[in-house]
Amino acid sequence: MTNHPAPFPRTTRFRTDCRPLPSQFGRDSGLTRTSIARGLGGRPSPDRPIPPPWDADGEIPKPVSARTRQLADRLFAEIVSGAHSFGTRLPAERLLSEQHGLSRNTVRQALGLLEQFGVVQRRIGSGSVVRYRPEPQADPPPALAPRLPNALDLSELGDITSPLELGVVRSIIEPEIARLAVLNMTSRDIQRIKDTQSEIDQVTVDGERFSALDDSFRMQLAEGTHNPLLVAIYTMINRVSNDAGWSVQRRRRLTPARIREYKLQNLSLCEAIESRDIDSAVEFMRLLLAEFHQDLMRGA
Image (tube, rainbow, N blue to C red; front, side, top):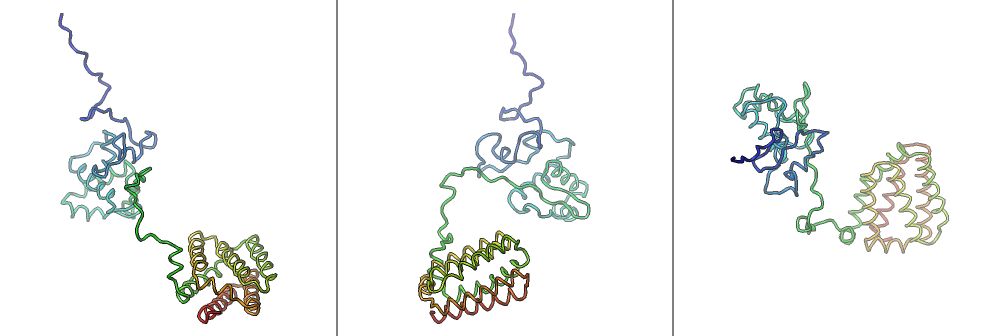
């Protein structure tokens, strides 16, 4: 009797590369865009384009024509390349129809395919908004992430920043900090600056001690805005100011008389913030900055 090999089970589906296809793409399938990009295993390859999700799934809920599929593939490739970034709108159906020489119905079906797989979101009156956002590659090898030669070095920035340049930046940032501090500071925030102000009041002759407490006072004002980006910017300003050689010398040369004047101005600013007086707080901050700028320019 001749033995014939057993046929493949009818329930198994194979790709041309002999790997089984996943049964479904979606939230419950366990697949992410990264796993699609990895070809169901391995790292994404810069030489291999990310396939559309309907290719990874192998099945489209609603069959579409070849032209519809080709347009959807092209639009997905443009989205992956960054031509249409997350949150932006794709061109209108009419424009896509003219650009690709296809009927409006074909364009509409291609956009529907993108929507089925979560690549875009369509809203009446708003068009098709891109919702696809590739996941970053995890653990890139060191060779793929070299240190940028022009990366920002704050210590070097302090060496090349002049007193005039620092004064200009502070005059832009700090009045707005004062305004936002009045609007956003909580009672606990205000108590913190009052405590720091009390410590400042105890300093009479030590210029470096006064300057360190004054830095803390201003940093607390920035934190009181509850704006993380503004806090980060002011942290950088403080760092540059502390690293600059001319600033270090100025701190050491502060006289008791100058310390007394600064203390009175800080107290006025603190009281304006506590009373929620925006105009007075901004004005006191500008006066403080004008005095600070004059001191820097004359080397006081």
